[in-house]
Image 1 (cartoon, rainbow, N blue to C red):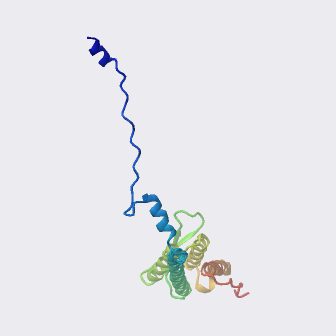
Image 2: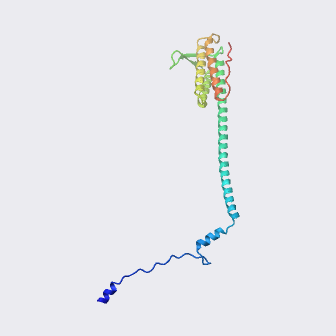
Image 3: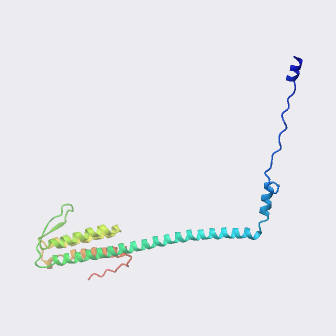
Amino acid sequence: MDQLRGVCGQQLTPPPAKAPTTALSSDGEPWGLVTRRQLGSVPRGNVVDVLGTSITGLVALTGVALGGWLSLRNQDRMWRRDHDRHWRDIRLRTYSDFMSSLRRYVAFVVEGDARIDAAPHPTVPGEQMPLFDSEGRPYKEGLEAALMAVRLVSSRLETVHACIGTVAAARQVAAARATLPASGVPSNLFEVLWAAEHEFLNSARKEVDLAALPDMRRR
């Protein structure tokens, strides 16, 4: 029993810890030392070459990115210039067609044998609406179609308002012909028409980057 107690009471000590092992190279030296020695043995010229190659690649990539950005910017600028030129041509043609339709309308109205009737305007008090027969209807429809084309393509509200005012003035000249001969149309109606036409011309010219014209109406 004493022998058993002696065995149980014996102080047990843990085994000694093993020293950490270090990986060795084939020469028997620590691997970290071998790595530093190997790195230290690299010639300085090779390190400079590696850095130079990296910098050259970075500069090349930057140049490619910058060139791509400049190319996209130039393409966008060219597209905008072509787009503006395209719409400028459309507006010039539309405004020219409107002036031609207006001239044909007025030329028909002042003909001596033109048959025109008039009726009160349904929405504008004090104004008359001209009514045309089959001979004059194409001139009326042509002017109204030209007006709608201007309203469709114009980029300035002032141009649209001037166009509408010009058509309204031309209609008043035509309405006066319902009861008066061509020579009896009041001159003030023609003055209002030419003033409205001049306002439209300058507004249209401003829209297509042209200088304004002076008032060249006959005095």
